[in-house]
Image 1 (tube, rainbow, N blue to C red):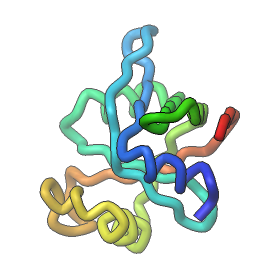
Image 2: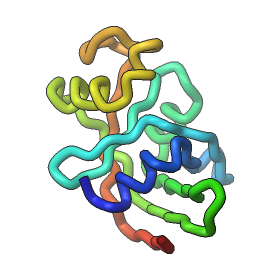
Image 3: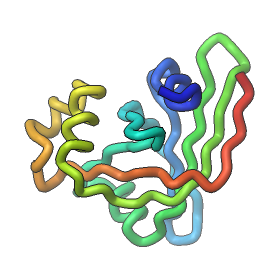
Image 4: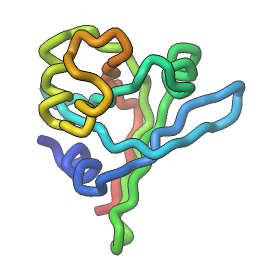
Length: 123
């Protein structure tokens, strides 16, 4: 696992920012995984963040490790992933998602690969 993904997982929660009617919108996230060196997040279909990404896929992830001044900021484009093996990996890596989705083919369970366009790290 690359250092950035490892860092996000160690933080426990990070902020995922989207664009909502031309304005920034942020919320805490915790589910993240890495597949073949790429970063993935999962999002429920009924959530506002899902609709925001569908309208404008530009996202940013920001995390600060508790008790430190270590941080990361990742900008990218969210691209939906329909691969069932990738969804299975997300459910294995983030078992808390099983409270919301029982299997990888759940219609409301969406997985997005973050195509990184810029990143800044300080750790």
